[in-house]
Image (cartoon, rainbow, N blue to C red; front, top):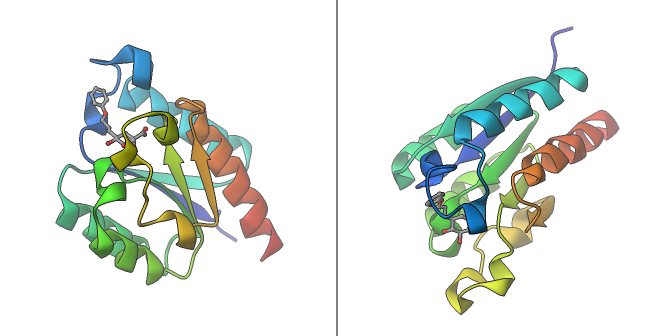
Length: 148
Ligand code: CA2
């Protein structure tokens, strides 16, 4: 049997990780984060696919591609978290669970970051753990997938 696949989706501006605002987002680049996700998935016997997009439509297309093929998703939709009913609808159409991740503690920032269109349909939400949140999310999905 082939390994279950976890899909990691990062939204707008997360390609800039490690280049600016280290006090909020840390010093790791997106490539560093994705490499760590691959290592964690390998440790857990999972396959991993990563996607980053700056546009709402391309993120929705990536979520659609995960339908059927992916056992679970890690989603940091960036600022679209706070605005996008379309990304919410795409995630609601995926049978597999998703874990919402934010590198920063959005509740300790501007009030407009406190609302998420995704949290109430997420299997779990991880906030303010830095880029380690992706690691936690994959481990949580591994537990959820093995329970199915
Ligand atoms: O804390 C998070 O992970 C966020 O999803 C990051 C988004 C922000 O809009 C959300 O409210 C919270 C922004 C990502 C921007 O990433 C950058 C990384 C480095 C330099 C500049 C932006």
